[in-house]
Figure 1: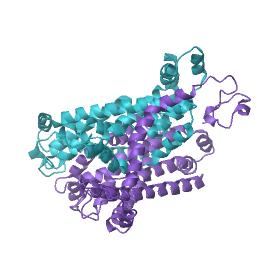
Figure 2 (figure 1 turned 90 degrees about the vertical axis):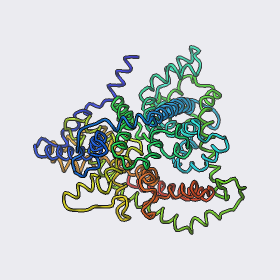
Figure 3 (figure 1 turned 135 degrees about the vertical axis):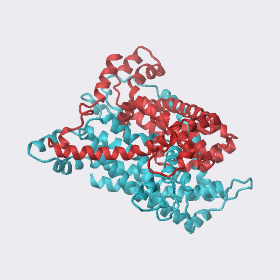
Length: 299
Length: 315
């Protein structure tokens, strides 16, 4: 297994990835300086809102309210963070976000990999028609479903439950499609050998196909997690109980309440951003590669 | 995706075989029992049927009724909702806002992403840091993005106006001026989501064969020349993909606008999906909201088909 892992990793890292293409700039000095400057200006512009938010979150509310272009107007203080954590809502919402995004990811990955394997290897009647319907469903904007889904949740008596937030999010036709295409590319010899040895289909899937698909499965998992963590519209519509809200929804409901307290709102924004930045730092290569291999990440 | 089939495999491929099924046909076929495959697909079909097909059908049915959130009985009204929607000035103005937003956000979202990817790919040190800088905002939940930008756009103390003030310009009502608000939202959206397009371009650049570039360099073509004549043309297909995904994504704008301006000032930033939300959940007219969603879906389908056509011709 370790041998396979190494080859896979080696193949997934193009030789020029870290150095880029030096040819693009030629060997002159001027193009390098120009490109470097442009890159630095763009990166500074993209980081500026973060830096401004961090600086603001570390000030007292009084200092924030003093005019001035410099974001640092007074002594640094963690007061804003303390106030937020004391109020207790943000930790509850963060817990909900983790629970909901985690369960959505788990269920979606299990359901989608099974389905993709069934679509890839199965020979059952209607397989092609079902696959065609699944692929066509990719085009449907999720927002189209919000009104009837809400009616459905009323009917099931599930409004304001975790199940109502989680279940409608586990349908991911795009992920099934991406996984199926990957499974299609896996050579069948190994499976056939296992089948001759009398392994059950589930066993073949679990111990042969799945280990070979680890990179794509984890890429799918990461993108489903990011999507679920950031999902706003559906959780916003189906939850009213503050104890059930996710971070994005919770923060939106209190935004108006402490809209003038910018230190606190920046602190809560940064607290909510932190987990995903950590996820990105941990899985950076995998995220970048998954966009490269699948071409698609968002739901 | 072509599988490398052994000789003679083609001859044995039955009418039922798709190219992806091929490959192992020449020898003995040891395949899954037909029932087993269905068992694997079953859990997906269950959630797919319950939470996708059902609401799609239910929504379509609702669009022909006067269904509402109140407990009143609903009745079939035929095409009344659709006729009303076509004559509703709010439908047209919110559709216009959506199209305007799509126009002013998609162009920079494609061009800036391309510029970022070309710069990062050009071989300067610090790949990792540049990638994080450009992609990080994409990871943020919408509320976090809007919290940060509400602060940047704040009329008196916000960075944007204080910066303009040092030049003696302003203040600008970033979110309160009808002529400016949609541009402010587009600016936020570019900052927030350009990282995804950037990664698509970066991946495409990394998989380009370097042979043409090298040959041109040997022939003495300069950096600009090679960028225009070799690299950019090779990115044509990627640009088609990025543009298509971006236009579809921009058409569906809702979250950031709803949180930032609630569609204001004066309805000037209200997109069609917010109008659907307003009609359905604030006005309680679910049937009418469904009809508007389905009309909008028809627009999305038409746009997708037109794009597919255009890009196919370019190929």
